[in-house]
Amino acid sequence: MSDPVAQARARFDARPDNAAWMIDACWDTTNTGSAASPLSGLPIAVKSNYAVAGLRTLAGSAARDDGTVAEFDCPAVAAMRSAGAVIVGTLNMNELAYGFTGVNVRFGDVANPHSADHVAGGSSSASAAIVGAGVLDAALGTDTNGSIRVPAALCGVWGFRPSSASVSAEGIVPLAETLDVPGPLARNVKLLDAIATALGVETRVNARMSARIATLRGFPAHGAQPAVTAAVARVAKVLGASRSVELDWTAAARAASQVLTGYEAARNHRALLVDRAGGLEPLTRARLRAGLAVDGRWAQRALEVRNRLRTDPEGTFDGADVIVLASVAMTAPRRDAEFVELDGKQESVNAALGRCTSPFSFVGAAVVSVPFCEPDDNGLPIGVQLVARPGLDAVVLALAKVLEDDGIAAAQVQ
Image (cartoon, rainbow, N blue to C red):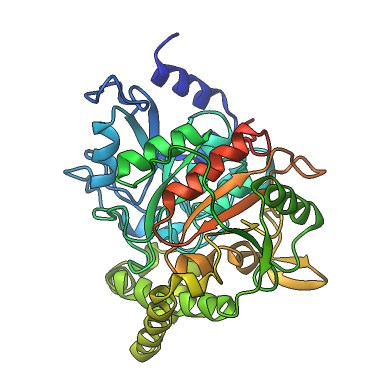
C-alpha cells in the first residue's frame, strides 16, 4: 500500500479510540497541487470550524447541524490544496472552540492518544490527537487563547500559532475574531514550516538566529509541575537563554482576553442562543449567555489594553525576542478531574490548561509549542512554548528546528 491517503485511512481504522476524532471524513484521493511541494500528496484533516467544500462546517456543535454543506473551501483549506495536500476530513473539537479540554457532548470526548484516561486538550482536540496517534502527520487547528498549543503540548506534537492577522481566518467559524488565528499541528518542524509557508506566513530563515532569548518568572510560569519546569530549563539552556524576565502585564492580559473572548463569542453566536439553544452543550450555552452580559465598554477597555501592549513590543517583552516557558503548567489531567493542584493551590482544569497561553495570544505573539523529548514519569508528553514578539514567526520556527536537530524536542507519537 503506497498511497499516503490509503495508509492514513488504514491507521485510522486500526485505532480503537478513533470514534471521536472525525466529524466528516471524505478520504479524498484527488490532488491538483504542485508535485514539487513538500505537502504534495500529504493527507491533512482540518478542525471542523474550517469551511471545506462539500462538508458541513459544524465547529463541533449540534446547533449548527442543519444539513448545509460548504460550497467553497475557506482560504486556508484552498491554500493547502494548492500546495498539494489532500484534505481527508474535518476534526472534532470543543464546541464552537470554547474550551481547553476536548470534551464534546454531541460528537464524543477526544481522548489523549497516550492515555485514554487523560484529556487531549482543546479546542483543537482531534487535530492534536490524530497527529499524536500517528494517523496523520499534520492537521490544521485554530488558536484563540491557546487552542493549538494546549492540545499540541498534551498530545506531544508540534503546534504553531502564527502572529495575529498573518493568516486569513475568512471562512472559519469564529470564536473571538480579535484573537482567532489558524495554524498547523504536525509531527515535525519541516511540516510545520511548510504548512505555515503555504498559509502565507513568512518563514524563511537561512541560519541559526541570534535572537535575544529569556525565560519567564512569575505569572503565568509559576507553579508548574517539576517535570515541566525541568523541561523548560533544558530547552532554555540549549537555546542559550541569557536572562529571566518578569512581565507585569500578563495577569491583566489574561483577564482582558477572557472579557474579549466572552464578549465577541456571545455576539458571534447570538443567533444560536436565540434559535437553537437546545442544540448547544449546557456549558457552552452558559458561557455564551454570560458573554451577552459583558458590557461593551469592558470589551473596549480590553482592546485598549491590547493596543497599548502591541504598540511597544520591545518594552512589552522587556527587550527579549523570544521567551521560553511551559505550554501548559502540567501534563494532561485525567478526564474525570475538575480541579488540579499546582504549587499547593487548586485550579479548575480549564483555567489551568490555558493559563500559560492566553496572555501571549492577547498580544498577537508568534508561538511554537515544542514537544519535549522525554515524557513525564507517567508517559505523558510535556510541552514548552517559544513565544516570539509579533512578526518574528521565522525566528521562532528556526529555533524550533534547532531544538529538533539537537534532539531536545521530538513528537511523541503513539
